Each structure stands twice: as C-alpha cells, then as structure tokens.
Image (cartoon, rainbow, N blue to C red; front, side, top):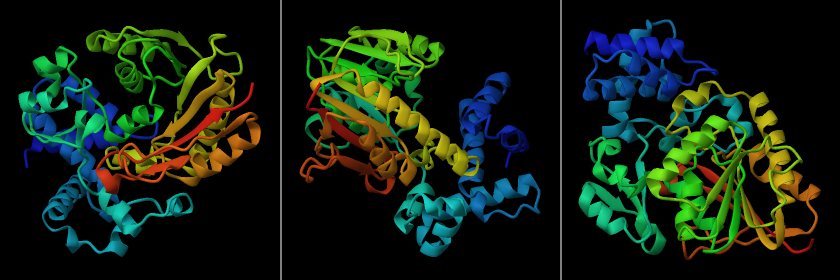
Length: 378
C-alpha cells in the first residue's frame, strides 16, 4: 500500500469527529493537497470509509495504520465472500449496541450497511433510456417515471461530463427520488419545499411540474439556498422562489399551498451505508433533539396547507423516534388533517399506506421514511 495514501487516510480519520464529518474532512484534505491523482484520491476515500464501515471489527490496541489495513481486508473479503460473515456477527458489530432500541437491526439490514453504496442518477423526465445510452454503464431501475432512475456502474467522473453540465441529470439517491414521486405534484400547482437544503428534491418537483406553477423553497441557512440557485440554473428550473425560514410559527409567506414537503433535518440512520462515520458519532440525545425539531417544523408548516392540499414528511432515518413515534406526536397536534394513503413509488403494485419505510436492503438506496396527510378542513 502506498505510504502517502495510507498517511492521508490516517490524517482524515484522526480529524473526523461529530463536528467534522469524515466526508467533509476528506474533501478538504484532498483540496489542500493537489499531489493526488483521481485514482489515488479514490483509494484514500476507500480506506477512510472502509475503516468506519468495519470499525466494529477493529482492535483499538493496534496502530491506526494496522486498523485501516485490516478494515480494507475485511471489505475485500465481504465483497468476494459475504457468507464468511455470520448474521449474528454482522448484527452485533455493524452498528452501536444502543441502536437496537431504535431500529430492529436485521441481518439483511446489517449486510446492506456493510456493502458499498450504489450511485443513483435522475434523468430529466422521459430521458432515462437516452441518457443511459450516452453515459454507458447504467442500469435502468424500472418503467414509467422509474425509467429515469439510473444506477451508474462506471468509473468516469460524472461531474465532468457534458451531460451533467447541460443539466441532463442530477446525482440523486433512489429513495430521495421516491419522495418526489410520492408528492406527485401537478403542473400549475403551488408547492412549498420547507427544508429545501441544496435543492435536490425541489429540482425533482420542478421537473414533475414541467417547470410550471410555483415552488417556494426555504431553509434555515442562506448559503444552501445560494447553492440551490446555482443548481437550478444548470437544471433550467425557474418556477421557484427562495427565502430563509427559521422553522418557527411565523411562516415565510401567507400563501396556501396545494402541497407542502417537510424533508426534515434528521439523524441520517438511513444513510449509514453511504456515510458509515455517522454510525459512531450519533447519540440518543441527538435523536431526541432532532425528533423535537421535526415535530415543530411539521406542525408549523402544516398551517400553510390549503383545504384538499397535501402535507408530506420525509426523513432519511429509520428509528422509531423520528418515524412512527414522531407521526403519533404530530397527529395529536394537528386538526383537520387525515392520513393520506400512498403507493410506494418503488413498488407500483403495492398496497397503499399512509406511512412508508424504504429499506436499503430492498432496492439499494438510502433508508427513507415517508408519511402523508391531506387537509380536510380549514
């Protein structure tokens, strides 16, 4: 193993903590040291994320370099011979023990967490097959709207492709795409993406609305909205307005909406396949505080839904506090809303349900929870 690559991986791991996520530290380190070619940067990334993915198997008494090497060996062994690892071993070691109070960590879930994440793209409406042919190395997920969801299996830097710069696709996880499909906005409607972040779901809503109607996009942090504006320009999405909202009872507009999406800040337990570092920094206290924030956001945003309009809640988390328990808390506060039955966008023939769990072991996307209501009274 190249000593420079191992040394940088060690530095990233040492500097990563709850306030400094490993992916952000890695990005900054690579930006600061331009000596690494693209393939070397990929090796560093592989070592860092293998370390956190297999941390439950590592001996802290050994040097960090030895632990990183061992983690890489475990990752390679799991890829070629996953049955070498027993179900009980994976359940016990892949996540912190306290998580069992929040999520039923099945062997299937644990195996998904220890696998390499898939890279999902969302093509512009109706362009999935054409994009797959042009990019190559793509697997089309399904039919209908799901024909625009592509798994990319190649090695090219997609952000350098002409198709990306032309706005022909977004890098967007499959389960995140499912949220937009569950919203099912119609052209000409008025929607509010209350926790828009950098705009992934807003851009999907805009595409589904054929760039017609209006979408309000808000976030607590202004710099995210500035980044959203840049992304929207590349995607040629124009039917939106941006403003900061602190999540409080004072809403950013008096407009009443056909639909409100609250894709709330969350613990991200559903992303632990893609972001293994977070497994070891999250605490029970974090989840409790996030659940309180989620309930406030959802309760406040509900006031902006017009009669007959939809309210959707989504989080890339799978624990009880942020999903079924949260829904019970919010329903005790809301008046004039009834649960809205949704068909799982990834299983078009599934029976409708008002609460959807999307598990990473089923389709290879992030874990996601979606709940929906319709306003029946003023």
